[in-house]
Amino acid sequence: MRAGKKAFQTNGLMNHGSILGNGSYFGVDLTADALALKAEFMREYYARRRGGKSFEALDVDGQAVVEERVERELDADAPEGSIARYSAAETYAHRRIRDRYVDRYYGGAPERGIPSGFVDSPDQAERIADFALWTAWMAHTDRPGSDHSYTNDWPYVPGTGNRPTGQVLVWSTISVVLLVAGGGIGVWAYHAFDFAEPTTEIVDVPSPDEVSITPTQYAAAWYVPVAGALFVTQALVGALLAHYYVERTGFFDVGDALDIDVVSLVPFSVGRTWHVNLAVLWITTLWLAGGLFLPGLFAERDPPRQAAGATALLGALVIATVGAFAGVWFGIQGKLGTPEEGELWWWFGSEGLEYLETGRFWKLLLLGALGGWTGLVLRSVRRLDEAPTGLGHFMAYAGGSIALMFGASMLYTPETNMAVTEFWRWWVVHMWVEGVFEFFVTTVISVALVSMDLVEQADAEKAILFEVFTIMAAGIVGVSHHYWWVGLPDVWVPIGTTFSTLEFVPLVFILYRSLGSTDR
Image (tube, rainbow, N blue to C red; front, side, top):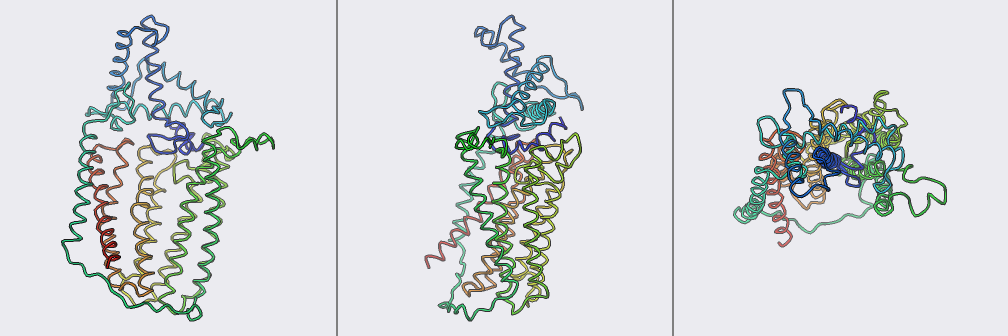
């Protein structure tokens, strides 16, 4: 099963299908697929024990008896200490599913966009089946001391006893109530408290000839065409992926005309990995450019060698990007060896986890680049005469937090249990999107508005503090709504529901205040 986890990751299957509901949905969710097949083959086993040729050949009463036995067996298949035991029916089903996965992932399944020889060997396909069946086991097996599985009876497969649990239904209802009530509280707070709206005189926009540009700002401008190239590439790769949904075995007959197997050359898992990460990269590149450009609006000159540092940082980002994307292709194509041969695939290929696919070496290089960028911004803002809680320093803190959260992706290895791996993966993905990215955007917009004399600096700093202590405070705990289905403890169900809903309250407040300012 551990070997299967590595095979699942090295072949990029989270960007072809998914596991525990997390990933792409071009292919199947392996957890749901293995669980449904397990129930199907167990019913077949017991039907034959009753003398039938198949489950469908049994009469209604016979089918009901078999269905009840399979559901009862799977719903209460609790481990004995550290040992989990299969029944004869489960053993039969496991072997049949191995055969099915060999046919699919080694033999090929064009209707699923899987070319022949997608994995290196039948043995590797069997290991993937073992891993998928382990996730199916944790999805249907009752957690010790509980009446539901490790994944709160997810995914929904009624034939195995997997239906929404009582606490899931209760807390989902509570979350809807909190969502409505929270929005109302945000609106009430805006109208109940007297917040002075910022005012400004008519803005005197200077002529471009009167604006001085520092060497660092010139260097930061080169980030823009790089981001543009990344965006165009993302759009083109996205078009290829969209076409794969229509024609899963080719690309406008180009392959036939040129004798090229396009699907084998650029499998869906490779294309989606590129597509997802290109989106993150072009956005991040522009934010890095903004962080390097904006301090120059408040300072007359750059720190020593600041422009050279900005240029070197751009070069490091380009090298890391090209290396990471090439590594993903080589890794998924099996050019960097199999997990049985070593961990070259892990270091320089694809880690195989959605949004965090690039090899560990390239991630370390990117982490170093983010850390270097934070240092460059700090060098600039320290020349400003402001407190550590000043506007410029907030920009450095916001950028540094991006690197800090990215560091959580270093806290697992190929050997780490999938539930623990998912815990740290969501720390990066959720906290980037619903935490530090919002923190950074708020800071950058505040710096821009202050530089144009549209907002007072003190007001902008208060707004950023409000952002940090509300949205991020709720977001850090709210990340736990991702833990419901990946095998983590039940306590995250109420905590994740409550705090992820509370993230909405400050957003409503900010929205109303923004609309109110516009009306005035």
